Length: 178
Image (cartoon, rainbow, N blue to C red; front, side):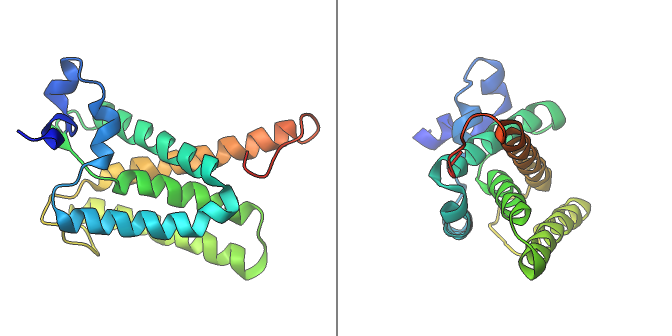
C-alpha cells in the first residue's frame, strides 16, 4: 500500500484510532481526472472568493468543510467504508463564499450569487436522486451526500460569520479578513 492508502477515509481504520484520515482524506484523489476536477474547482473558487474573504476565511471555510463532511460520513453514512476527494469541502467554500458576498451585494450581483447557490443545491439533489454525477466522470462512485454536507457546512459558516459580525458591530473593531 502507498501513502494514500494510509490517508483516505477508511471506516475500519478510523474506528481503530487512525483519526488523521478524517482530515487528510479530502486531499487524496482516486485518479488524475478526479484530482484535475477538484483542483480546477479549488482554483476557481479561490480566485473568486479569496479577494473578498481573505485567505484566513477561505482556509477556515475549507477546514470547517473538512470537519463537517468527515463527521457526516461517520454519522450519516454508516455503511460507507471508504471516501476520498475535495468536492464535498469545495461545496462548503462555494456556499460560505457566495452567501458572504451576497450579504454585502445588491441588485443583479446578489441575484446571480443566490441563483448560483440554488443551482448548486439543485445539482446536488438531482445527483442524490440519480446517485450519479451530472457534470464529471472520474470513474469513481460519487457520494453526493458529501456535497450536501459540505453545502450545509458552508451555510452554517456564513451564518456564524454574519452573527459574529453583528455581535461585534458595536464592540470590538473587526478587520476585513475576520
